[in-house]
Image (cartoon, rainbow, N blue to C red; front, side, top):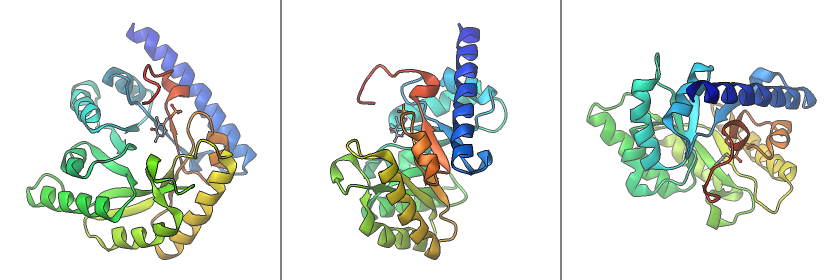
Amino acid sequence: MTDERRAELAAALAELQERIAAACAAAGRRPDEVRLLPITKTFPATDVALLAELGMTEFGENRDQEARAKSEELRGLVQGPPPRLHMIGNVQRNKARSVLRWASVVQTVDSPRLADALAKAVAAARDAGERDGPLEVLLQASIDGDPARGGSPLPELADLADRVARSEQLSLRGVMTVAPRDWEPARAFAALAETAGKLLLDHPNAVEISAGMSQDLEAAIAHGSTLVRVGTSLLGGRRLASL
Ligand SMILES: *Cc1c(COP(=O)(O)O)cnc(C)c1O
């Protein structure tokens, strides 16, 4: 069973890496400019461990409870340094402290209130001796400004970036987005790239552009993505459509 799954994941990973390399070549970018972030939500810790054996070091998860349990399980499954987990789902402010226990990066900071809640939780964790440094964060951008699906409207991102940058508890690393469903992906990622370029002028460390998923990673890579978040094309279909 494990051997079968390992072979399946190895084949899917090789195919995906070729796809990413081809997209980089088409965009005139070097393949090492784009990292792959496997999105392992709904899949078991054993899949994460197999991907770690295949060389993956960072993974994305979208639910606090699930990710926290998985990260604990991973301690017994993965040799060497523990994988870095990225929170790519909506963070409830009252869960900030819990998310810190497993997430190395929070990609979904989309409001001053959430930034403040995370900063406060980091300060408390540092006071308690549970962590050393600040938390790496990406700002989640809403390209179409529809608040229903998370993300900060583009015109508000500059203020949010300044607020995060002022916090000693948070380290601003870049931006993240999910292309709106009814938009052409290239148009959405071009808008993100423009915003990211402006932010970079004031925040030279905010270099990460987390954009592109199974369906649209080519368009994202063409528009400057540095981190593609891929679930389905690597791990297979998820049972629950909403996840
Ligand atoms: C689930 C998810 C992904 C991965 O989507 P796939 O289509 O399965 O590749 C990427 N980003 C976010 C924010 C997600 O929730």
